[in-house]
Length: 179
Image (cartoon, rainbow, N blue to C red; front, side, top):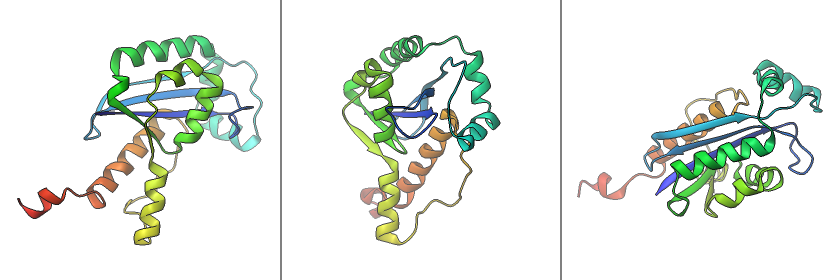
């Protein structure tokens, strides 16, 4: 089984009304090693968003990238589907994200063919974070890192976070016992 990480950047947090700015897919093996990835920015000439969101995306370069992009939503979806079908076996992958419900809701609204091509199996790393806090009173995550709100950076942060949970919370009992 492999893992397909997804992330989207949007103009707001409402999947129905937001504009999709960037989509990222990262394929890892079960040991969280990156096998392949794709990140696409969608063309926009005029973007409507709250000032705080505009500041974030102006500072991280995404607004300029969207203005310079030649990819429409349909063209970006075609490119992502081509990459996906050539790199990931749908029946042998699980979809992961830091907020997978939001990402999948955006894709359902904005890129339904891509959403339909993804596995129905998904894991939300934020749920593991909440369980760690509930059960242990803290997260094993050693550091807080500022999010850059770019798909490549956000996905890597979540992959690293799950790796930390794996090493602290999901230890192999056979390996630990020396059997």
